Image 1 (tube, rainbow, N blue to C red):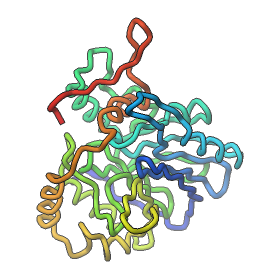
Image 2: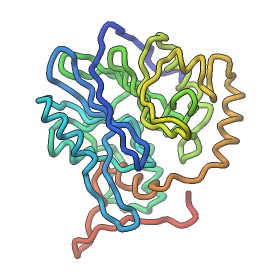
Image 3: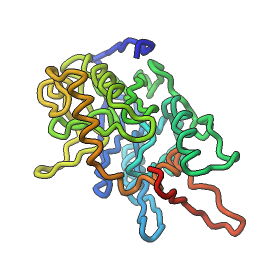
Image 4: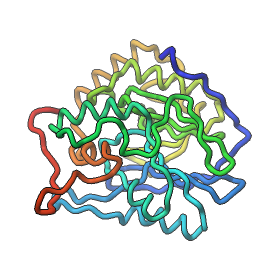
Length: 297
């Protein structure tokens, strides 16, 4: 973790954030607007899939498209915080409808190499991240209108996880959950609980007032919540707070992960998302298929 860039925070900038919740996958997507222009970015959009029927649609993503058009916003980015294992991305559809560059962390190449082997992809599947428009390195900045955003490498859940710092808002992907939800699992290929701990510590080193926007929420006895703060996480997170040691976290996380089932949509999600949201190529008859590797995950 020593090669990570120091975090430079500008709490004076307050982006306008609107959330969209996909109930089927408990996923939050966001439209993040520059307060001084009509420029925006879209973070983690979801494509719908009826897995049993093998049918996809963009009904959920259409809510985002309609909102952006209604507000007359200019979309500049479609940000993937990581290669999701629980839902399919609607990034290509958003790009088709609204424009914008699709961005992901540069360690996507590690994820692609890992899952290309698992799904027995041929040489036609590129493992260099070229399906995406932008591969962010740690500490790399980009602009949303006049507003500066910064990509922060926060691996552990997956090797390619990036949190995105935009003024006084940080979009943490699956690195952290709401305080009563704890943290994400670290047992997927390339995941690591100790690495996740250091990524969380990095995020919690930011100012207490920093807003943290979740990618998921899985409540049992309350409505879904998408927003917390560094202070609340440090004080109340049930898995990793200001009194949790690294070894305590690693022991808890590894023990807990052994009890978890694989996400329901992990097989279609990984095959699509590692292609930046594109389906696998059609066969000679024009049919598209997803693979189900047996006894691998």
